[in-house]
Length: 494
Image (cartoon, rainbow, N blue to C red):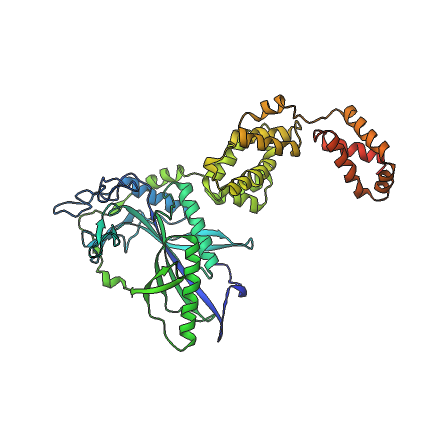
């Protein structure tokens, strides 16, 4: 399914080139106020065990009841991934004992998941795209949290997360480099945020990745994979995959074999280490959960959810390119985060002439606003310049009231002091001078005072720029640059 792997993506070893094969299992916490099978709050940061119902604590006689909003969120996500929505799915018990799993089993989906095959298109650094296949998406409940650092002899258990709904999104082994894996997680997180089905906050553990990595000589069958559990940053995902691939290559080139196992990534040491031997499905003794009926819904139910979907990043990017002539890169920057795209859309809505100024607005949002926010370490939500103010600035440039140079000064005033850009231009006399007669007098004076420069410019027209600079300087930057250029060309005979 993926684009062909370039030779540069291969890893050079002592015995020749090696290819890495990567598949990711993303655990994404569902955006919902209540847990998957109980009414307990999913709010982050509560006191330990303050969001725990009798169902979450597995008290005798307590039965799970499905949260329909979590089902809707899973279907929305599947639709956003262009995936098959299975009209009938079932829940299974995945049996294993762990102190933060009170039931002694996890309610998950095994043979009949809610979402089947789909795909994600990723953008790579060289401007190319590749398609990563989705194998499945299923719903399951999260486990609690073990706290080991509050006592030298005891482990504390916090069940606030126990029972929180997760979507496990399983990719096909289509990725061939850590860069592709990072691009995939980044794109998937963007899609989830656009859909509103997961906030993608990796610091809180609301999105985390299990990385399955194996290596092989190009063209050989798949090698034995190792799984790196619960990696919670895109940067660490890249580091963990690269280290693990090189670790496996080292073992194989020394004549060893790869043991299928689960590993952890230590970001402080930059290495993976063994956690446990990898379990197979039969080790979990899956069987259908007898307390939960199969999930069944009609095509109308799915169609109603499809009709409510927002415009997703790929479609939005294509629209920005076709409607405003943006480059693929600029459009990708604008749609990378939902908040950025919404800011640009609001800016567009405030323009008097979208067709004329749409591309200009994109340049200002990307270069001036995003550049300044990045420099100041701020995000779009805390921008001192609103989309309405940005639209006013772009309108003033597009309609010829101010020049691009004056606009930069105006942007600085709005950033630091606030205010209505149009009112500021009036109050501070920042309007561009378009009166040809007034500009012509300045041009004549400068030409008369610099006969040597006139001769040079007539011999080498590129030197006309010196005259443009002098006129703009003399007019305090307010002369209309187009008028200045036209007058100079005429009077210098260029």
